Image 1 (cartoon, helix red, strand yellow):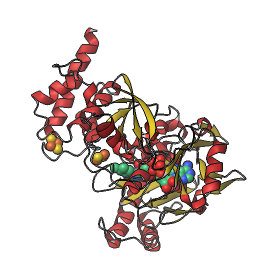
Image 2 (cartoon, each protein chain N blue to C red):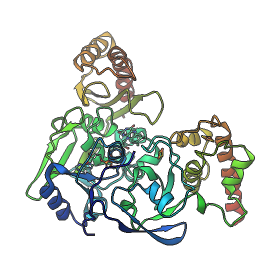
Image 3 (cartoon, rainbow over the protein chains, first blue to last red):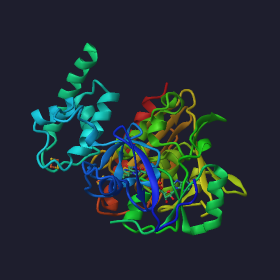
Length: 169
Length: 275
Ligand SMILES: Cc1cc2nc3c(=O)[nH]c(=O)nc-3n(C[C@@H](O)[C@H](O)[C@H](O)COP(=O)(O)OP(=O)(O)OC[C@H]3O[C@@H](n4cnc5c(N)ncnc54)[C@H](O)[C@@H]3O)c2cc1C
Ligand code: FES
Ligand code: FES
């Protein structure tokens, strides 16, 4: 790849929620801003912008990662999933999203997109977590509304339902 | 909080990375996982003219066993080392310590070598390198050198690395048969940087304890087979020698107290784990 010069915009191509998309970014543009302002996917939230709160967590190449700690140019060529990609079709929620609704696992919703993305990947890789496992994993996220109890309950409920789905398949 | 302007180069080979670092000197920064550098850029505490991304250099992404040490290349992420199937068998101490670095969501991007290059006094990887007498491989276009961890970490966020040098790999010696290992850390919350972190290795000849989070860099000492009040006294002396830092998280006195208490528990646990 040639050296990308500061102050100029460069084409960044990613696969976003299954679709090949591209946009222009200066080298200094954060992936959060690229997703929200250039690609128009505002589901990913920005809280602290220094890696602590987890609101911006997305799926980069199959692993949960902070979009605010990633430059758009670093993500060129990556496969990205964001909260917009979770629902199986318009008007339907994923198993995890539905568990969040039933357990009141969100209030203001600011932290929710990041937590959903983290847990979506986590439950795929860890189908039978203990409550302690879920709590430890959620340590990478801050929620100022719920007190975490309903989030943990929703995650464990979703894990159980997803195991059932896997058994029936 | 947005970074100031910089050029970006995604190095396709080690030679290209070396060349860019040599040409730009102190105005260039390596970017590895970006978990520390990107916030520093956003807060404009770092203002490099060029970022050299080393994460696509194939030969830097390997974990191998060489000369009875685990060699971890500069593009290996913390999560990848944690997921390496041989880790617990080859070096249990490293396997114990890695889950304490930040969160699952930062270990997916942060690298092992980036943590060594940064040399945060509370970081787990520098501590384990010092505890195990590991080594750091530095390279530039012209030369390569290997340096003992104890000599590499020179102070608060400072190392023996020259601006044009890359941390190409770090080496963690493999565990020897019959050794016992223990790792303990005290922080306000799991995932925070350690206030005090302790790593101990015990064999028939004695026990070595390394402490992070207290001095300006991780430091180790051998405690032989001391126990009882003699061990307390030796830990007290070590705690004093560390010249504990004082910050918002803990006073120097609290840190010394943690060295005495947790240091002792870690030594005892390592001894009990010996087979
Ligand atoms: C919320 C949060 C919590 C964290 N908690 C912890 C913790 O508990 N313990 C801990 O140890 N760390 C913690 N970290 C930091 C850790 O995640 C970083 O991964 C690590 O410190 C740096 O690795 P990196 O690959 O991200 O490096 P980068 O951020 O890319 O680089 C860090 C510095 O090292 C230099 N550098 C990187 N690689 C090389 C190389 N190969 N050669 C030469 N120079 C290089 C860069 O130029 C830069 O100056 C935390 C980070 C966050 C965001
Ligand atoms: S906005 Fe990225 S972690 Fe807070
Ligand atoms: S729902 Fe408001 S911060 Fe989590």
